[in-house]
Image 1 (cartoon, rainbow, N blue to C red):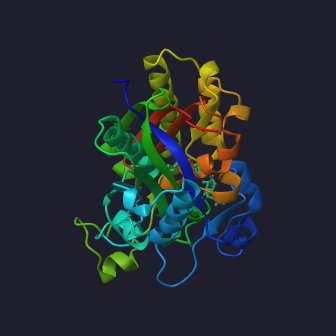
Image 2 (cartoon, rainbow, N blue to C red):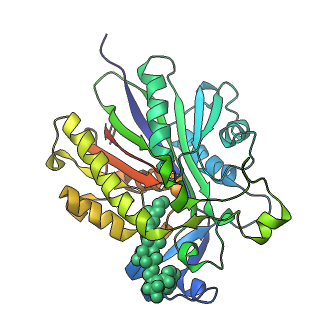
Image 3 (spheres, rainbow, N blue to C red):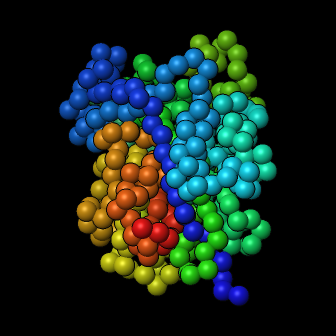
Length: 330
Ligand code: UT7
């Protein structure tokens, strides 16, 4: 029997309606549109408003669209993996809440926390369950309500992040298209430059941790910037080399949307023209685990069967990597 590939057979996405513009941020912190656009490429980001709405709310929207588009019976889905660093609760897992709300009663579920690389890690993991022949319908969703962990008095982080969700369906393919290979990396030394200090088991929540604003993202931007460029470019090269490919073979690079200057530097290092790089950071900012599926969602109508895609990301941990896949439809 031919090798089973895990093919993406559909994409769903969701961004909340509220647009937090650079102009509105100018009224909140000491910043300006010119600085934000020239340093990050971001014009606006979406924010999930409304009491009691968490990441699962957006995940449900994205997965509901995915199920409809692919004409999938929720009961046929066997596994749901949600990549997120902003779960609704510490437990139960967000994927479980998404599956419950959409009637995916035969699925088992879990969350995967790898920050901005979460979607790459979850997609690779989900693909293995298909390649091994264990399951036939796996959903991988990236959902992050970054506004729930952003300090809107900290101008160095509040301009960057936004809320959103994207999801893909993975199914077996016997024609050779789909997930091909990935290079994934982790380095816990990244803790010092990108973290949330409290709220975990090391420093449980207390009045003091709240007063010290330790439940918000802390980022030391410059070292993260440098590590992101070398990490993403290195992972892309490694996966290309392993598959005897050059960048000329690649139809689209799908980078994590953290900063337009990072994306341009990675493209420059890898020698990829920007026309072949998906960029929507200007509209959504950095939605962490949702950036890559939201790009696939937006570009879906332009993608053709056999297109070679290189997905790459870098984020908290540190975590980073690249995936090489071929598109299965269109
Ligand atoms: O997705 C997860 C991984 N994260 C990333 O990949 C993010 C990587 N880092 C970055 O994207 C960039 O480092 C930032 C966008 C976070 C910051 O850009 P930067 O060019 O590295 O700026 P900086 O932090 O070195 O700050 C330069 C100056 C500073 O002023 P001085 O010290 O030169 O007077 C900052 O205080 O810009 C100032 N600044 C701002 N000015 C206006 C910082 N934030 C702002 C702001 N508006 N929002």
